[in-house]
Length: 133
Image (tube, rainbow, N blue to C red; front, top):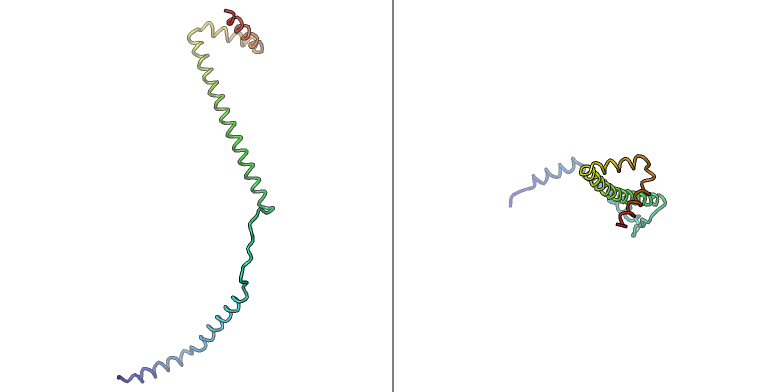
């Protein structure tokens, strides 16, 4: 077996130079403080249930109001789109009549422009006359 005593002596001298016992005491003190802190912690941490609080209720109500406003706006847009499509079709029909029968178009324009409020009575008279035929 080789003689390692000189190596051991060298290691002993290095240990004495670095004073490892002071570092070991510091580490031990930290571990002790961690243990103390851990023992102070409760075994069961209290849990706060997240029910609607007074502050969050206003956000929920605001969100619901925004959704309602969006739904109503969307409904109005769809309704106006349908009405606009219907009016566009009516406009195309009237334009075709004016192109095909220019005299009839001028007559309709003159009746409407002379008295716009009278047009309903005039239309009812024409429909009654047409149903009699």
